[in-house]
Image (cartoon, rainbow, N blue to C red; front, side):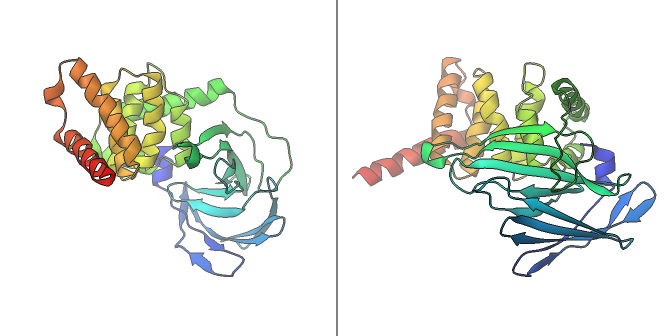
Amino acid sequence: MKLIKALSASIAFALVSSSSVATVLSFQSKLGDAESGGLLNYRDETDGLTLSYQADQGKVLSYHVKKYDECSTMSAYKIESKNQLAINGSCPSQGGQVFEYIYEWDSKALNWCLRREITGEKADRTAAEVVPSIHVARVKGCVEPGSQAQLQYESKEKAKGAIRNELKEFHEMNLNRKSVNKFIDLLATYDIYELADSIDPSSVEDINNIAYFLSENNRSYDAIILLQKIVQEFPDRTVAKLNLADAYWNTHLDEQGIKMYKEYVAQMTARGLERKIPRHVIMRIDRKSRKSETSEE
């Protein structure tokens, strides 16, 4: 995340599906002193996606992205907060494989270059899973869409260093609401998964605060990704349990929310802090209990 650069840049694409229904968004991208833009068209073929990108200068680039797996359902979309294109070929089933690749326009290479490889498994709601198992890898060089070239990855140490710098940037905002909201707006979901993999004693407070502001900005599901990991790794962080319960509740995951509210209440009571339990916690637990009693009658 490069906040200053990203804030000065906005991007839009025309995404055309196989049914020829186009989504057209205003497009203006400013990189340095130059302004440029373009239209991206894609069509879903039997064996994958065919894409073409026409820049303002008139040059047309064509790509063909083969299905990543036999079960892949292929699509492309714009990541709203960044100058990036996502190509998704994940399997649609519960617990299905995740295949998603994030590309960014490179003004030097004059091409779309792969920046993130996202793999893993979707959450299986039939098994009461809420968050998928996701791995995000940072890719080096400029691998264009559809290329069969072997990927080269950034080292874990370099990736962790970049994430530490992002957390330092957040920390130095000193919870200034305006600055924090801009920071949150620029976080893509894959950034959230990278943060979740970076939770340790030195980062847990800042990441917990990021989760709180995600919920405050109507992104409770993204907050759950972080808070589940925090509660798992740091079970004594009582405030994280409250934040996680609230995020579950806001996402209509009532059963998980009530379970976490009860853990929070038990922990607060054991510490003699029951008077500090927010009123909404008790009200939600009581309301759920009354509904359960009514349904049993």
